[in-house]
Amino acid sequence: MVLALAAAGAGSYVALRSSPTPAAQVVRSGGHKSSTTTSSAVHHAPPRALHVVSITPRNGSAGVDGAGQVSITFSAPVARNSPMPTLSPSVPGTWSASGSTLTFSPAQPFVPLSQVKLVIPAGSQGPTGTQGGTLAARVVEKFTVANGSTLRLQQLLSILDYSPLAWQPSSTPIAATDTTAQLQAMYSPPAGSFSWRNSGWPSQLVALWKPGRYNVFTRGLVMSFQADHGLIVNGTPTPSLWSSLIQTVASGVVNTGGYNYAIGNKVPPESLTVWHNGTVVLHSEANTGIPQSPTQAGTYPVFARYRNQVMRGTNPNGTSYADPVQFVAYFHGGDAVHYFPRAAYGIPQSLGCIELPLSAAAQAWPYLAYGTLVTVLN
Image (tube, rainbow, N blue to C red; front, top):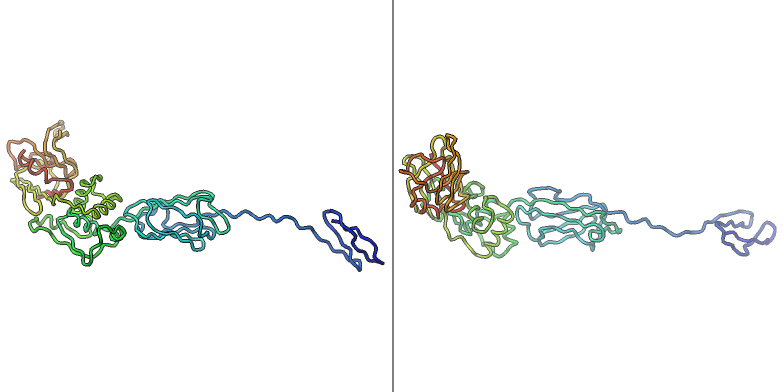
């Protein structure tokens, strides 16, 4: 604004009044001039948007520690009272903020093999910077938890009487209903010892037992448990398997069917022998595969069972067959133990299956349950 001036003496002036003008000049005594500018409204810049710098575990990671922390680093410090990210499946635990990092510390481990989804919401629904910044778009990442210990899997299956071996912990047993402790043990199994429940098992089965190793022996135990608890019978550990084991241990329901094992011997006269809880319950002449389609040596778990079935396939000469059979238990590909009418038994006659007389097949079938190991010798 411009000041109206009046003479106050030679070379001097005083201000009388002001008028609204863009700027003002004041002439001081001595003839010097100074200029001033009026103040205007202060405009604050909007808070800078928040963005994610890093996440641990990284997106797509596998074999992640189920009891480990999840951390997220942002581009700026995060307000402690802002909304937190979410994890699915959820487990008990707490989020904490330290500077620009949020950390989730689980109070209970994730179930082995779980696929965990981390969601960081955007805007006011998600983390807010101390200066008010938020994420422009939500962030979604996934990681997969490590498998549990094979040794603990064997321990649990022994506790539930699916194994021919009993397990005894070296110290106080974990409480059956202590879910947190049971989950922790799946990654860090307690010390203990295994012992055979019965002494009548053949050496072939005894040789298969390997503590801490996931081989056909343990796979058979898993398949037996899966069949009893409505899971897919494939012998593969899954989150559902581990969860079901925890629930079953907590309920106190154990297997009452015992343990079964079978050996098909191709040395003439060919035979099938079946054990139940260490005792032979069947020994019968049997037929195995002809040289053009032999029964493969090895040990295999029963994976499919039928009371009656029409088997279809192709003969070595190229013709097709459709044979009605009974008491069927598949153990290796298209090979099964089953009844098939023959004039005699004890010699190679099948296309890979182990054929039994009707009465023997009916007696064997209940013991050839899902997961029962069948060893083919010679």
